[in-house]
Length: 196
Image (cartoon, rainbow, N blue to C red; front, side, top):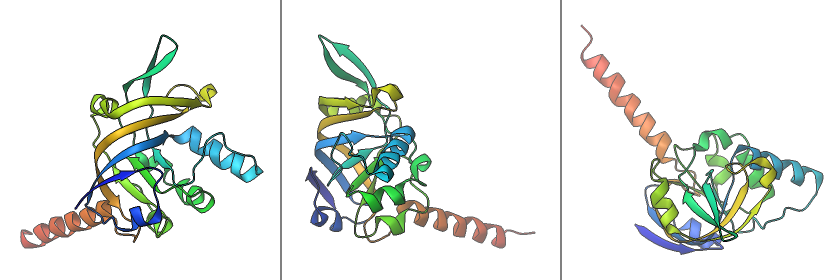
């Protein structure tokens, strides 16, 4: 199935999605990589407010390349970064905040239980940073610029951002894990059939 969703996302939006579905997003996304995740969790632990709203939010694992023209930020490239680096922090993030979708590349390990009834993981193809930039219509703001351009949190408005593939749905079905299991089964089946 193919879905065209608008932010902020609601539980009904994500609960209809199944692993393998195609999704396009219109609305606001927030970029966040390793250091931004660490700071979110640190401030949350201290009970301090965040400068952006994560209720119904989409977090995009991305370190964009930006330029400033006439005082305004523009996106040069905004491809996904490897999501696996954020896997350990994601369960706590989802426990504390109502993030409804995570976009990145390569899948995530040991997060499917944390996503259940809360969130989906949307996979974006690596190597399409320029294509991603074309879908970004406006840079709304930047937070924690002291972390550096790729690690700061960028708030961006996107139109028909995608195609994104539902890699892990809110029921716990993990497309990446399923593919790995199938590949191992085929590989070891081949070895057994051809030993000797």
